[in-house]
Image (cartoon, rainbow, N blue to C red; front, side, top):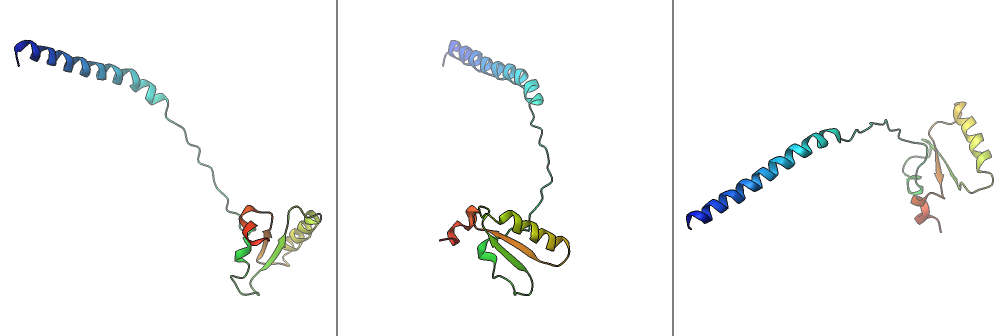
Length: 109
């Protein structure tokens, strides 16, 4: 390599380094202001509804299961009665199986 080729190679290398340094200092302030703020929400796990396949997992004395469709005409009234029994302390270990739930579709023919 002659001296002119070495000089051109050094100029190209320094130009690339200078370009990276300029882009770094241009984007650094923008990147610091754009950090996403994640909101931590407290999750609540519902234990009232279960799947059809879980009905027979325990002894019959441990819990009650109400199998229903949300589209049923009497769903609202039945739900009110069950909530009253549950709130009154008459029923312990009470679960609902909703046959309209997409997870239960494989059990409904």
